[in-house]
Length: 253
Picture (tube, rainbow, N blue to C red):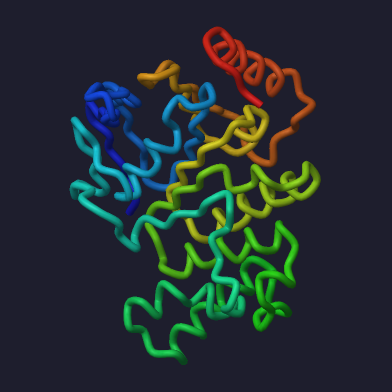
């Protein structure tokens, strides 16, 4: 299961002069099991901070996050994280990068390689299982990062602008591949993006955050089935609506 509940969440960062920067304030959000949520908002509004708190990599100042009724108090393999910069180990082959989390849990080599091979095949990289990261393209490296997160069988997959550094063609292909993977794995996904077009294409719901201190400004359900037509009037209307909300007080790429 992957139900995420965020209640009255706040995050303040102390400054050297003794004051604080309030990044998040009063965030209330319910995310259902198997839902695909995209977080958008002005640059610097706190999207990544919110994602890191859900992951257990940051501690909230106020409020709480629970996953399936259990409070988030630190990192947990059941919450997988995928970053924009891939974060692969350059000295490890693809198979060993994907199996890393299982290795840290003490899973025997034969078993963890079997699991890793399953997810490497799922992301279409079986022929590159013995390659090193420097031998792969940017899109291929991100597929390895996704396979590594999936290998731990997370209930919730947290993705921080995972396709932001890719060219437009590769980005569009990776979006389609992610949706195909999600159909197979059924994880809850919380996805941070600066691209409103990407959010409308991927999400079941788009959560629009305000400028700092960030609150939930709008919760927009996307009712259309997938795959979605980016050229349709409805797609353009939702995209324009979200952009208008962001551009009133911030900026978006």
